[in-house]
Length: 213
Length: 213
Image (cartoon, rainbow over all chains, first blue to last red):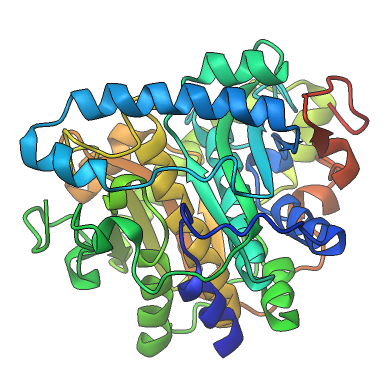
């Protein structure tokens, strides 16, 4: 049990520590197998994994992400803008591989068991697979960084993702020089982590728990 | 590493195997600590956990879920309806505890780093915490079952969840007599799992991969 928790707490959202060394194919297969073993609504397994190693595709995506970074930066006030300027938000070119995880709502439709009342349940399944992938990569001593500074239609067009299938994440994956002890955003003074006790409620939701808003 | 993968692949979506025995408080704390260690967009940690042990609340919720089950059943054709009739979809009363996980989009807003281009990124963070919780419970030899046959406004009203905060999951949690080797929905002939190879693409999405649609 200790090994399991060690992996879980060691996991980090990696930006600056990718070494660029190749990913061992056997490790990659175990990681994708772990992702594919995630639970899914109605056993639809509505995910797909696009492994992006092509440098041209990654450069085009990185340029787009840079533009989106500028858009967000322009929305910030002085202090926040200064803090944000110091934060690296992606390692698209430094990481060994991009893994784009997609969601196909048509898989298993129309009778998706467990989705009639909550349309987003299919999308949730895709995120469960992402966390399995992330933890398995950590167990393999690799790093993962989730990039979300992009427009979905841009990424869909770039990788030929068909209409109706939604890209949910671009994950940077690869060997790292280290996994930081403290999350980047905390280290750079962007935001502090909440205390666990502030997130726990009993039988009814209790607004106004302590911790940062 | 083998212990980590053993936990990951042993995890099941539990319906019928809850024993109702109490959850060890120290184990529960480790599980919630694991959930709280999940990654989140802009380090917002936008989740909360409502631990529902009150039997009256659970009975009211179970009744609502039963109604939603009937609604879904009525939408199915003959064969599918017969198969569905044999499938247990929740263990709300048999499990030791309900854990309702919520999403607060206002936490850290308006400057949520990583959400300006993808509004759902906050919701994704909440699902990442759920998978951490699920796996940690498995490591503790407990079972988890995600119930999604409910309407969000009903659950929000039942637990006093404030406007603007969204319930994302009702998780049944507790000791189990066993974790099934095969997912319930496969065992009951509802749906088969896809082969991993059908979910992997290289550089571009390739429609028409093999495997069940």
